[in-house]
Amino acid sequence: MSTSESELADIRYQQYELPPSLGKNPSEDTLKAYFNSYGWVYVCKIINETSNNITFYSPYNKEKGRGEISPGKQESNNSKGYIPYSSSDLQYEIKYYNTSLKMWSQISITDLGHDWLLSFKQAGVDIDEREVRPYSGFTAEITLIINDSGYKIYGCSFKNIQSSLALYRTGPR
Image 1: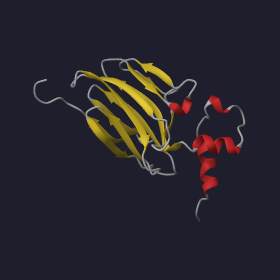
Image 2: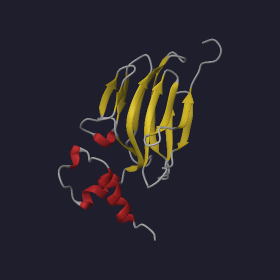
Image 3: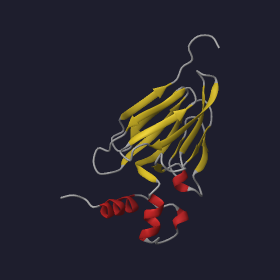
């Protein structure tokens, strides 16, 4: 038995709290138009394992989707939301200080092909692509852990590492 596109849309609309910008009881057309920019990867929270504050922007939650996370802390209210498709003008962003490179880095995250393939763009890296397929269902739920040299992606449900990237400087600068 196949699942129709409208049934899939209903699953996504009902799975998580909708952003306040959609108002109470948005129409199906409003929901479809809004979710047309977002993929099937959902950020549950961000954990800051760096020695500096990090900032984030989650376009899914336009009103409250910006914030700062102190070292050793985590954020799961304003940072949560779906990752936008690369075909939209939106991108999920995290800015952190990379102690190895001795510079601030911004990670821009988008869903590349509507198939749980994420693109992580930052200075010094062309494009880092990571697949984060869900264990069951349609939505992949991830926790982003930012450390002093890069990031890790954990599954929210099973708490296992799915991917990671570390950037280090080699040679004199």
